[in-house]
Image (tube, helix red, strand yellow):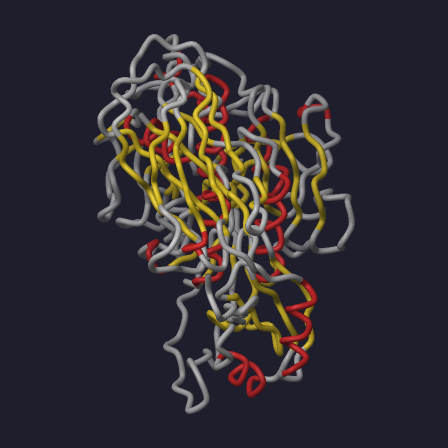
Length: 519
């Protein structure tokens, strides 16, 4: 048993600049004699606002307010699902001192993000993604309507009451006005939502859409507001779920961490590569490996050039291309409009992810990503500038898929781990499946706990066989995120697979955040 307790909270203030598919490179950090350097300036900085992330996972609003007050700051927003931290008001000197606190992981200046889309003026994008080759055949074939999945659209809001959404769209939360009505007052989000799942213009014509408003009527907002949206979706998503963000800005670790937290929670995330004609590895959240990063192509299968100063971002941090030039979709207030940008390419991929999850409801985000990338059409895009030459293809969903859960699955809910109490379990249920397990079954575990050495962790197979993954004791970490390889070749895949966790020492509690099984 341990003699010393670990810190209960850690905060980091991070400055973030977003632009819906518009990115701004961060400047080098300025050295400080006080603690880890906090950037003195970023483009479009929000004066006196900072983003803070904690090292520990067991923090709450009171901890955040106490820590901010200790250094003369004031908390404006708190985050406790996608990441642990807060946004706060303070001076640069106060932020620098806060960054040196042992409980703080990082501090970044807050900055603006903007939605970008160039209006122009048939829905060729749907026509393109269901076929391998040009010319377009004037048809869009789909195996299902995505009605088994929910897509959360982080944007300027959505005109969710209009008839094109057929009653399937709803309001999640408005983080700009701090109320429950995420209606659109700009148009960008309604266009994005229409490409995801409107009856006429959508890839997934039966998907449920939840609007989460994080951008203002001018199409911009601080990163702190957007991280609140990611955090909300991570806590409230009904799975299988997709989070789509046609948003981007200068590279920032806080936003990347928030996206990673959503993926760990079992949510597939699609993000725009950006419209600046630069390397997407300079852009957040486009550079986040766990997200599906989407570049834009035009009707001739070329990398999209939107105007003399804007073109699709590119490079090794992108995953695939989607239709992004002159895309017709729903207009705020009714009717249609054309817009261009990686903002328009991204919802094509989000809709495709919803189609896949409807056919394969237990698929993990990694499995969704692999399916879309493995089946994308190769070698069609010209002027890729080092991007993977893959174009979104939904036609592979036209056949009868393997039983949805045969490939594996992910747990749906968080499970609380009591202090020095009984073991608890998180379950992945595999439906009727003829196949056996494999010698290299992947067991991905994400647990939030301030002292991981307290935990005994087992995998329990459907037959009741117990495979120990971790014994209590030994070297400890704050939280545990680890993938184990287990031989399950002697087991039927069908049944309940349980991750069993017990805290065997006193003083700490935790949560099983995610448990994923891949055969």
